[in-house]
Picture 1 (tube, one colour):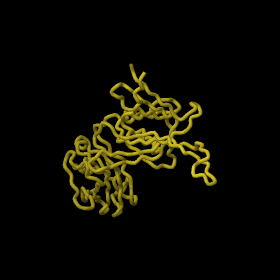
Picture 2 (cartoon, one colour):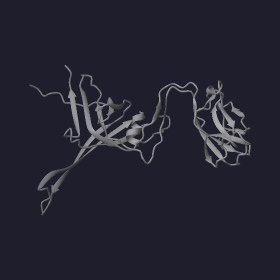
Picture 3 (cartoon, one colour):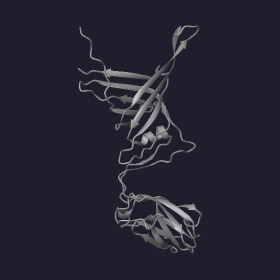
Picture 4 (tube, helix red, strand yellow):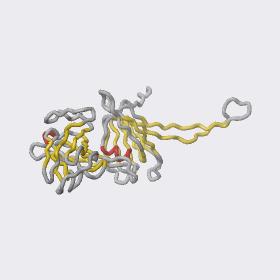
Length: 295
C-alpha cells in the first residue's frame, strides 16, 4: 500500500457568519483574498545551570486569531465589527430622498417662520436632477442663501452641474420668500420659505443630504456610546479542489472589533480585519475542522 495523497488547502471560497443563539446566518463574504486561522502557541522552557538547552518544555497559552481580507462591505460586517447595524432600504425608490434640513451654525436658516421651512424634491422634474451628496445652505442676507455641495461625484446626473468657485458653491443668492417656493432645478431641490417675515442671520448655515432615485441604499452612524459588538460563529470554507475535496472550519465562538474602510486609487477597496476565537463550553472547544473527498 502506498502513501496517501497529502491533504491540501487551496484558496478560499467563503466566510459565513452566524448567530450563536439561533444558528441563523448574518450573511456571507465571497469576495475574499488571503485569509487564515492562526493557532500560535508558546512553549515554556525550564533553563538552568550551565546547560545550554532546556531541561523540560511544557506548552503555554495558545492564541487563536483569524485574519480576514475582503473587498465586500456587507451590512452585517458593520454590525459585527463596528458595533452598529445599518439601515438597509431594499425597496426601489423612484423619487429619490432628501434628508430633513438641519441647522448647523446658528438657528435662522432652517426655520418654520423666518427661514427655510423645508428642502424637498421638486415634484415631477426633480428626481431626474437629484445628485448624490451633502449640501449646505448659507444665509448671505436676510432673504437669500447660497448653496454649497461637498462633492461633485454625481454632477453629471440629469442637468450637468459644476462648482462655481473654490468654495464649492453650486448656486448663488437664492431668494427665500414667505410661504413661497424657490426651485433649484440643477439639483432638483425646492426650498420653501417660512410662514412669517423672512429674516435670516447672515452667516448661519443648515445642511441636508440627497439620494438620487435608487434600487437599494444603506446608512449607518458609527461610534455611538451604546453600540455593541456581538459574539458570532464563523464558518470558513476553502475553494473546492479539482478532485472534489472540500475543507471547512467552524469557529464556535468569535468576536471582532474594527474594520477599515479602504479607498484606493483605481482599485477596489480591500480591508483586513481580525477575529479572536475563544472557548465555547457548550461545545467543548473553539472550532471544528471538516474535510471530505467525495466519491
